[in-house]
Length: 476
Image 1 (cartoon, rainbow, N blue to C red):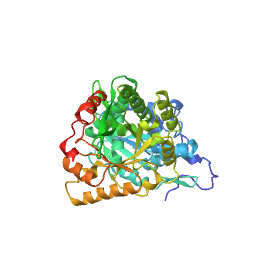
Image 2 (cartoon, helix red, strand yellow; image 1 turned 180 degrees about the horizontal axis):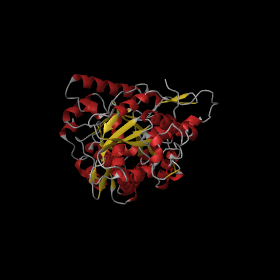
Image 3 (cartoon, rainbow, N blue to C red; image 1 turned 45 degrees about the vertical axis):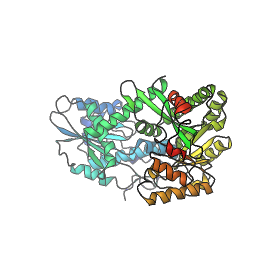
Image 4 (spheres, rainbow, N blue to C red; image 1 turned 90 degrees about the vertical axis):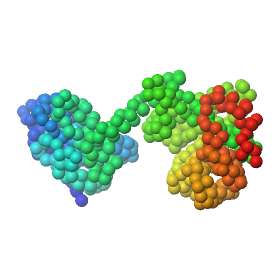
């Protein structure tokens, strides 16, 4: 196992070997041939402050002056940015900086002295190899993958890298260094999906990355606009009284250029970024405004909204909910907060404590998507909730065979024994409705009763279409 910090250093010490001098043999000897040099040593303006390698500015300048002919641009990333941010938060910026220095040093040692390496961003390094051997990888790439299998060791602490290597054939007519670098980064990100540790640039994958960036950028603007986002409401039907029990608010986005953007596309992206906070708060604000508007028309309806685990980690989330309800004179019980089944990290966790606090304040709590993936039955005893929602993947298979039926019937019985109100998601047929009613399920939700609809359309639907003339299957 390699050690990137020599022995004998005291804890927290920065080994000089991790920050080699620019004139030393540790970095490529050809670095002295870079533009911007003085006496064989690159000027400070084109050197990265951490690695002392030529920086992004030097990369663009030197590639724009590059030799003619095709070559392979290689981009190496040491870790996922979110993982690195977590490392910096947990271990401090000194150790995080040392991680980058150690990675740069190891990469330079593997690549050797004949190839200049550029430190183009905090976690990314680029260099060029002559020619192209696509779709295979140059032998050097395989040596880099092997060379980083052992963790970096900093003051005796082993820290794993999560290497990504992207390759891009460059140097063609009209080639842009900036576009080549962006394409290589796209390939490096794609390399995490494979087993080799490296990937050639792929236009289809790159277009997906472009789409992701476009969605996140436009969603930021949509949250500030007045007309792009809208809540639609899907009814939940009490199976005992055949009346509308409550609704679930589901966000919809119509972009002026892209058109309708599926929530299955933009919601997970928001949940993976800081945009989940403004998006959830937009939903809360829109839902409480709609509750007030419906009450003005004589309709009293509990509204369920989806809450991300990241929302529950926000220090002021509970305060925001309470303030929003108080500002509109809404009882807390008018809101139901649906949390996914996987939010609990264990008894006494921050999230379970926040959920318990919200329920104590009078908000209704629902465990969403129960039965999707690997369900933890102990979770049901830890999380303070009113309602258990059976995932649509179980409900949609009821008519197909007895196994799903026994499972759903068992969940209904178990949920009732634990004091939960049971909601079945994804009810689409009369047969599914009949079975759920026979097993004592409390509430059904799905296209059999109504698709998500605008606030005005739901008001009209509720006033006449369902409550006065329910389907025959619902009048048993």
